[in-house]
Length: 171
Image (cartoon, rainbow, N blue to C red; front, side, top):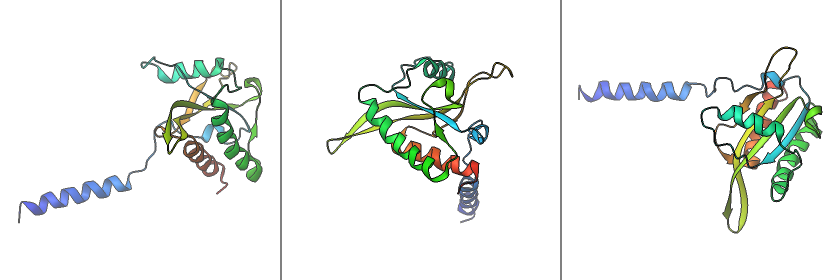
């Protein structure tokens, strides 16, 4: 019993410390877009293969991309835009940009795959928030927020909206 007690105590301390640790990824904050209003939504399947500088390659890919979705990505774009428009209508702290030149930042959904469940397609992918660079202040474009994992499109945009509300004090 004496050997079991210290082991049990160590396990309990490990689990309680894990439960209390905040789930914050370094550099994953929407603080930089708190006061920015114009967002451009981009949806497509990125062909990025460069694992050494994945975020840099995605940024280059997104900044060169056509913001108008094509093919089946229009449907995914419509799903995401519907949730964003609901947020825009309620809080009025965000507006949609139609071109990269009008946008303060880009919301990019990288479609990784379509899963079929009961003969219905569900788009899964990664969501990124990319702040445009500023030549005047020598700041390059950068990813300031990304979904914690690959998610269903509507869940990913829901997480982003929840974080936007929190950082803007709209809860």
